[in-house]
Length: 81
Image (cartoon, rainbow, N blue to C red; front, side, top):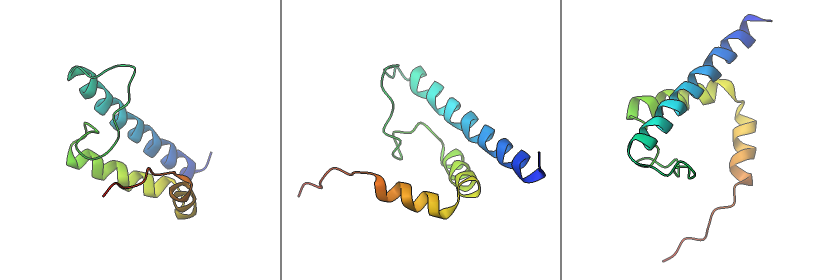
């Protein structure tokens, strides 16, 4: 295994840890265990520092092309006026 793959695995593990921490906070706040928070700021149960760390790690792990393609494939609901 190359050093690059090892680093990416460690980064991915850290993101999973951040999500697990946020999930536990959600459940501790009487969140529905069958529901997932929206992931939007204020409903993701992450601190600003954790959110920033997750964003930086995500950008390091996933190539920009993957991020762009994923963002284009998301179907957003229409905005109500």
